Amino acid sequence: MSIRVRRPATDRLELSQGDFLIVKQDLTAGEYRAFLRAATKPIALAAGGATPAMELDPIAAGEAMVLAYLLDWSFQDADGRPLVIADQPPAVVRAALDHLDHASYMEVQRAIQAHQATTEAARDDEKKTLSGGTGPDKTLTSAA
Amino acid sequence: MEPGTIRGARGLVKAAYLTAAEVTGYVLAKEPLTGAWMVRATVVTSDPYLLAQPDLVFVAPHKGGAWRWALASHHIAGAAFEARLRSL
Figure 1 (cartoon, one colour):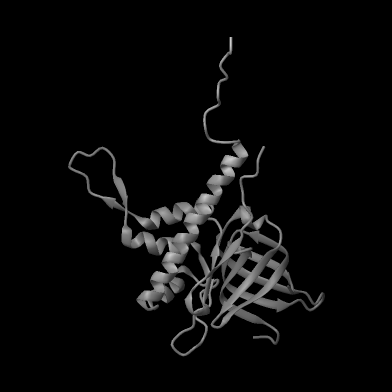
Figure 2 (cartoon, rainbow over the protein chains, first blue to last red):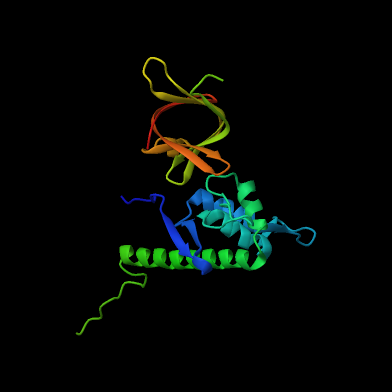
């Protein structure tokens, strides 16, 4: 038997100018599916195609990843008041992201993409450790 | 509104950062007999797995942030949500 549910944990990602993001350490299966739904779009196949197909939407995928992971930040609005996103509905978080200046948004997106890549690599390492390696079992050859 | 009563449009029940339930039209009031704070609301969405987790928190977002209380106990019947609160 093994534990297959992680306790929700957060990470703090440092940004320029002393700012920071609070992000989920991992996504649950449900959150990952929601991310995939938001990051893909249907594509038209030639007539007679058997099944509908989806492809990654490069514009939507970046925002979907940010929305999937982002919990809070230290950002302020143009008047220096906290730009509140913690516990706000997704529409409020999306609107706050849309009103960031472009460079700040890209800094957020890059930080979260790097976090996702780092976390995924760490999980892969965990799996290797728990399973005792990914390579095939070695067969010892007889010396006789 | 009675003194000591707080009303709000949208509240959340959180298990860490995960949303165990989203409620609407919440009313927070002190029970006259026990002095305990109770919240009553209508459930919009709920996650049975997360609602069974320990250390749930009721979050009442407002313009500048959010108020938070720990859930001492809670009960959902249909769309009706009721919980006894204690300070965090």
